[in-house]
Length: 327
Image 1 (cartoon, one colour):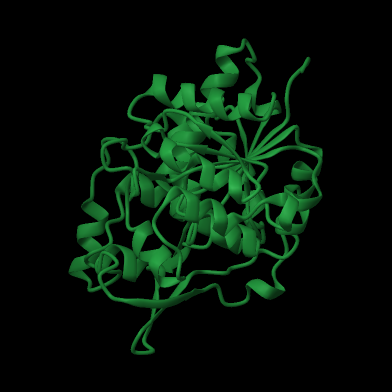
Image 2 (cartoon, rainbow, N blue to C red; image 1 turned 180 degrees about the vertical axis):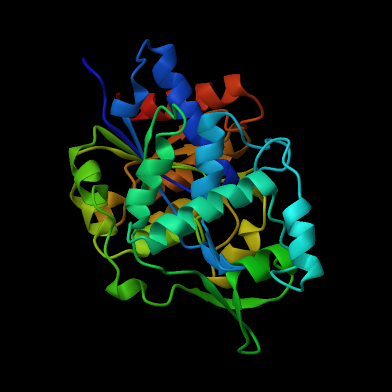
């Protein structure tokens, strides 16, 4: 195609941030310097939480920091070179969670966000204001302006915030299901549906399909927008060789009765021709043998290298995803 493509990425978590970096890198490699005019990222806010009086948005911050080049790439979250003096002081007061670290620079972000929210700004407004600090090369939108934090319901009926289940217990407590209370009454954030409708390609990042992409798709109107868009919808498998790349997505998939495999996750999203979402699905080279299974679902399989271990591989995957859509 000619001109600047309009790309929408649905993303969350470390996999999402690396993939977004790759898409931006692919655009720059094509000579598109104003990537912010081309790239819109709809970010999961289902793992947001109030803690110690401030509003945390882990996926929003991970993607913002990654695009700004200030993220702690080794840990996968937080700011590079951050300190934890305030966090230690909070623990001395018995405030917050001793197993949930708030870096000092990171806490500055949370305090700024909370102040703006209390002044009446929406999460969309806040994210736009945050984006002015750095040249992110993308427009970031929260999935919704409503608070729809993720709750994990355990087999014994106990209910935990997702962050406690994920960070404190490392997903070792058996989940029965995941809920986002209030999401049925939520609406997509301003600009989300419009960006999807106007897109030349929509990409589903290789993020956790249950707790990162799942909440975005659960916002009323988002699935409908994806099914209605004339743009190809291309997903990237978060499963390589039958295993998760990072985190505990396998535990999440098992909880909802989905096998940890590239084929099963493609089936979870479904083929757009059969009422689902996907037109094409990028599989890892390690999963080439099951490409025919994906094709049998009515989804076009494309076997590509999926490991994002450095900037070059991230950019190569971003280019592969764009090429899969003919962009």
